[in-house]
Image 1 (tube, rainbow, N blue to C red):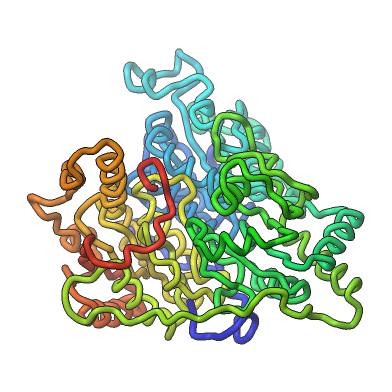
Image 2: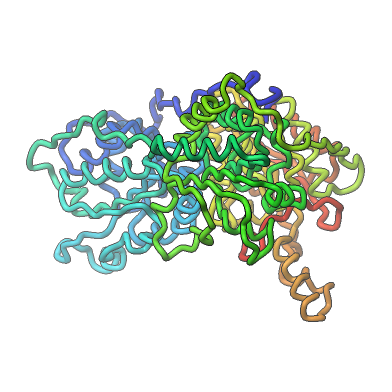
Length: 616
């Protein structure tokens, strides 16, 4: 969120991921830096790929690589980010990728570390975020294994643990093969559609001495290819459908973080006169205050957004997530889609049959196998050519109706809406990158004017990813002038909060708000639903859900890891003041945590966008 108004006015491209480690670790002693070991070649490959950071939880299975990162590279490019759990390491890399669209490296310890990391790998897969994961295994040669420990930490085909939700994996058998494997893994992760990749490094290989010269590839010749672009014929067909449409709608889904692409999407909507809908689960794709953005971003369609889809005669889907589900929620299950549908996506290339994250199969009249932003550029030109001199179409929808948001209650424990209104007021006056929002966030309170105003949700729908994702996002924007901030639930914090130690350790500024209702409230709603359906006491919905007796001191947990903070903050006035105190700490380079109490019985619990599972 930022104080700038409108679509293109005042927005700018933000320089990201430019930080390099330019100091010296006080623990680091001078060492020989000769390329002598296989793991040195692996580390050198990461540097040549311009990987700036590698998040890791130390483990003996990659002790050779660890030594090379320290004593061969001097712990710079990549710089190690020590994490307290492998899930946090991958989560940090995912948060970084959400902003930069570039893979950060992660190292996980053998099979046990990979097992810890699996939830975060699944998140990155579902969110289509690029991550380069390096794992390890005990010696493949049984004669080289130490008794007991090397045996339980050695696996055959370790990549099978996550093969269903990674783009590619490998287990190279030589130093030269490892160089190529890491290069390929980086290239594949960074190629549309993005996703995590995994390379398993045999400990015996890592620790072997190089017997011949390693030839490193010219990395300029191994960059990811350009995103897939549509044919001229299909562009013309789509342009004609949209120009002829009486009620066109654009569903803005998974698109790039580039401000240039953002501007082009605005120009395309204006050239067509289309209504625009966006998804609250994803990063911003279009300015929410633009007159063509008729309804606030949604977790699930509102009656107003459903009516827009019902009236549409042509729908352009730009990699909309779960297009069939959206039609079912807006039109009704089993109801035919009367509008013509143009669906632009390359997501089909990742569908493998194990995970159902491909969603239902939508009816489509024109399928375009292209990344959305590669379509927008030529499509805009084609629309303008068909329209003649008029760059903008007359609006084809009734004007947006502005509704007053109201004010937070000044007294009493906040409801989630009160908290959201205070956050909205705070962000409107600043350039803030929100790494995440607590579940059930009232989506009419958000205002997105820049593609970096929000990083999007984790993708996999688990609990505990919020802290690590926020750290990665804050790392990516460090030095940009934007204020890094996140609002997470108390369940998210208690499950993943020890990730914040890495932020303190690495000096990554971050403002953290905990929307603390002291209960797994999402599942309270589900238990209420079950009780109503089965004629049982609704009053029992809190049993087995509350995080009380004893009350958890969340700020003490944060301070124990080196962060500053305050709370519990009980009302909107005190919360607004706490945000300003926190901002001062963060602007000075620190981390600040605010425990903001939320009353689950207060009005305005928001747009609850989920229907099943743990984080729904």
